[in-house]
Image (cartoon, rainbow, N blue to C red):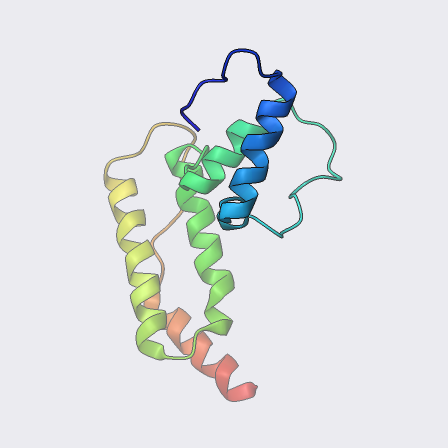
Length: 134
């Protein structure tokens, strides 16, 4: 919509014409979110809704690095019962374990980490026992 409104044409009728032409071309139906309900329509008003929405879309974390690592460790432990293979369990635990070891060596800014590296073998054994019990 780069063209300018012609002289002598009412603004409202010109805008209506532009909208009608877009709808006829099918441009409106190709917009992201077309036909989907508007998210958080019933939520209370928040002045910073657009900032939070942008951060969520971009995957930006607002937690300090130490707290983000604590959350990641909690999330991995909560995810263990859903994992199907021992190799995947070991991979996830080892990835987070490496991050914890690095954070213990070089503490990140912010609050204390208060985490110890995982005992991967013990957690894998607990995972095996839980799988056998179910």
